[in-house]
Length: 210
Image (cartoon, rainbow, N blue to C red; front, top):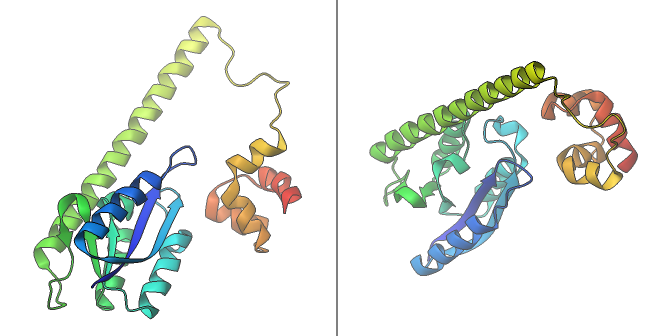
């Protein structure tokens, strides 16, 4: 019976990865695979591997626990940055661990443990498509925001929150869980800013919750 781990990811705190976990769990059970562990996070897929704790933890785990496969729902769950995602696939291949992409029935290693060149090519193409999709979404959002700002200026509409608005402590905690987690580990404000992009002023406010 093959031993596998699940890799799940969503891009924002408003999304939920439990649907991915449920679907993959059902699939692995039907396939007769034993799920050893689930690695999931709410993080942008364009971040570098070094900035994604679920990827780093997964790699450490599979290296030392005789795992046969890493299973994900679709290739974009591995990442939307082609080069960063290919890094992960290479590390897995080098350690004799296959990446299995359920939606396309793709396995990066053949049963004999050798790299499946066709699957590798298709994964690369799918990663490029995922990266292009993200760029298209960003361009549309930027264009829509620009049009909205121009309309507000033409019509004299005041933008943004009321000047009296102030987030509650609970809102800060819900919006910045990763930043708070990094601060609790003793990472400096400047380094947390480099990792997350959150302003130093906001990080100072979040330090009160550490």
